[in-house]
Image 1 (tube, one colour):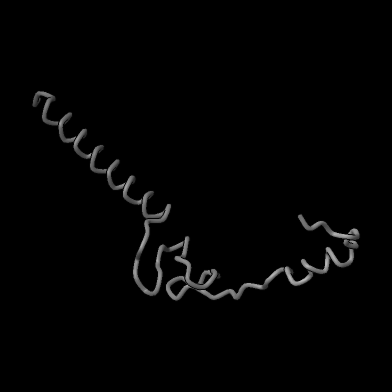
Image 2 (cartoon, one colour; image 1 turned 180 degrees about the vertical axis):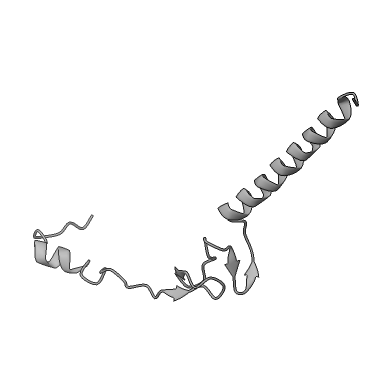
Length: 87
């Protein structure tokens, strides 16, 4: 089985990894809300990708929960008003 004759120096060993530097990514802006983001990525603020809504955001979930709570409280008030005897 072949074995290296001499130890490879640190300079030769480390030069193999010299080209693995950091890469600067381009930053684009969302066409819907102008938030900076990476290209080919859906916006986390508004949920849009290429002009179409592709995911729900925290704001969307918050709005649906608020609407559900309002409907629930309105039903509760309506039922309590009907159950009370008229005076």
